Amino acid sequence: MTEHTFFLEDISPLQIYGVNNLRLHQIENGFPDVKFVARGDELKIQGQPDMVELLKGLIGGLMAELKKKGQITENRFSELISNEPESPIERDFEPVSQDTVLVHGSGGLMIRPKNQGQRLIVGAAEKNDIIFASGPAGTGKTYIAVALAVRALKEKRVKKIILSRPAVDAGESLGFLPGDLRDKVDPYLRPLYDALEDMIHSEKLKYYLDNNIVEIVPLAYMRGRTLNHAFIIMDEAQNATESQMKMFLTRMGEHSHVIITGDDTQIDLPYRQRSGLIHAKKILQGIKGIAFVQLKNSDVVRHRLVREIIEAYEVEEAGQEHHPQERPRDFRKR
Image (cartoon, rainbow, N blue to C red; front, side, top):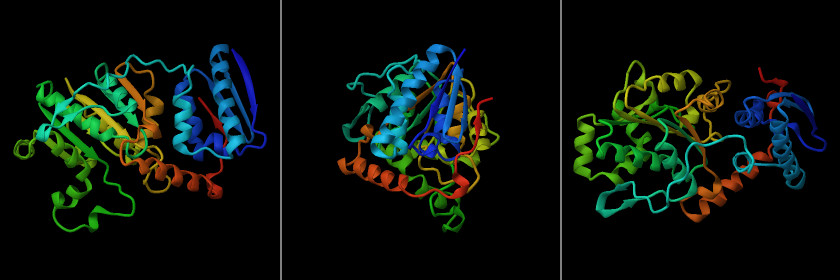
């Protein structure tokens, strides 16, 4: 065992630790055998010499960029962590070819992975039963997950597709929307319908929906079910609580596959409720059959301006002062 202490001179500890130590947890995910102790402007790490050396390079790189730019946005932070060339996280999968066709969709549309992140998701899905795909808006996480589900259904590897989202949305409450349950949730789940309509002919999709071969449901309605021979997707998973995430993951039955998509930086949960996505990514590392893919700003596939809009908002938000209760607290890995 060896030890190294970083002194965060001329750097706000919050830029390294994150609000409620979120960034420190993200680093910790890749180094499960290293102990972290953070006190004010001192960050101590303890572990095997090779792991400590890797962390010295990673955290040193973060500190150098902070000194140069003054701040690091959440997506840039995730990018630096995931791009660390000597990261100890080992993948048992590789990205598929950009020419891979997943689905022949409506009107002859051929659905292919459009960026490196999507190709990694497809590669991960070929070797794992549960995939966590995190990244910023516009990277096509949900779209490629739906394509994988439709491919599995068409190839008769599963008997049904279940698409779900937590009923949490920025500035909106489903209870105040007019109509019955379906009227309330259909607009909220519209992105999932849009993806399906690209991939399944409208009459066939109607048949699937009417016969519950394809289900689109709020997360709360998953409780108590056991889902066999199913392809299950949770979208916007950053807005699931820890208990909801546990409930969702334990619905998985025989011969089923699960993809969880979300954006760690867009959490709309009420104050003091912790994201189940972040918690799950922390505690499920190292379990065989579960894979983690982090998409980046460079994976954005919408209009070219979307990437620049995302980065502009991140820079503005990173520059805002945090409330006193968001100051970094002492942190110890147990």
